[in-house]
Image (cartoon, rainbow, N blue to C red):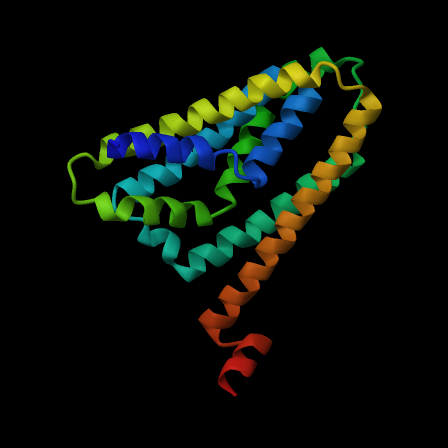
Length: 214
């Protein structure tokens, strides 16, 4: 099979792996409709494009810098926790929804962008995937096919989910928001856990360092 097609299929499948990106798109689509879902997908895809460009240009070593990881993860923890709390408190009502939609498209886009940027592990993924092909002339073509796979997957998912969401009642939607809120809180805890180990290994502090080196 052509290598570029493999990259396309990889993007297509990887986009739907459970994580902050797909969870945020789900939340926006179900609670605010297809327009917000599309905008959320666009925000996520913008973040993907940034990290993909860094990796394809051969400077993915930036993401391997421990200080960069810690700082990015720190802001990611704060932001994911903020989203979790906001969703938990949110009471989904359909009154004045169209007006809310008009006033918050930019907010949805920026929020989605930050959701993706707050996860520096994306650089690792693209770095591992593209590094073997950096010396090839086709690395740009491979990257484009990979990105097209992500685009098709996210937008198709959003459109299909929006059709399902039309039949969801407000009380059910509130329950879904609570569940998604818990997922974001768990993503935050996972980021805290991984950041803790990075700090221990990088600066030689904490119980991990004492356990391994005492």
